[in-house]
Length: 318
Image 1 (cartoon, rainbow, N blue to C red):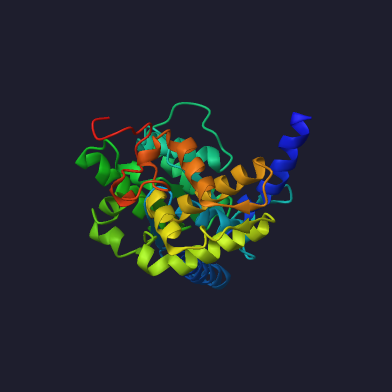
Image 2 (image 1 turned 120 degrees about the vertical axis):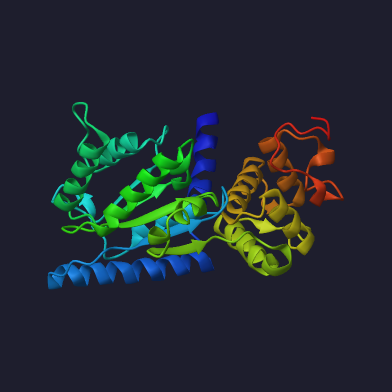
């Protein structure tokens, strides 16, 4: 019986996780990526080789930048992402591994291309193999998620090698490959480390939410998710005060706000109720953070002073 109830709840919640709401940053990314894709496709058709370009999506953790890339790559009508009938792989996507040494990143990239390394090689040899396999699979773009880690614990000399390797992919004489880098604001340091790399980058920043400017959009978002789950929003939810509290709880990050909204709706469904109230948001945050009620942004009067990034937060001396 419990399994049946759980299955029914998941059947109602799962479609919510598939909803993708486009914001201005996503639309900008979609436009830039499509232009670069069309340019590269045209050059290949004409037998012309020009250096490729890089798109850098920069935002805080939970901003939605990684989801934006995944959605665009999965739904772009002109991309071929491999399959049993073709070796062609227009885009290779992977997270920067830890430790993010040049050699290990190269090995992980080879694996993502479908060619795991069978024996020990030097970093230089590995990256020459990467370039060869990128050409063999007709890959047009290489996506590195958490790209800020490429500079993590790197010496100035090692960082220079990383930057030079990225540039060599863009400038390869036989098969230049475009880059998509997603990362936190620390990624700016890698891009700005080298003027030649910076001039080849289209930067797109995922801005943080602002309660004064984004209230109507967030209210519309809440209504959209509630309707999709077959629930109603109580009057205490359809208020700017609730929106301000939700934005603060989500650290002003768009993707995290959606995640919290879905978790709140799931809690309402588990209670077998048909309307979402502010207490559901309070319970969701309590479950996520383990905080006391006095430090729950959906309960406290002076919610803006609360450090919502801290878990098990019980007071100033914690």
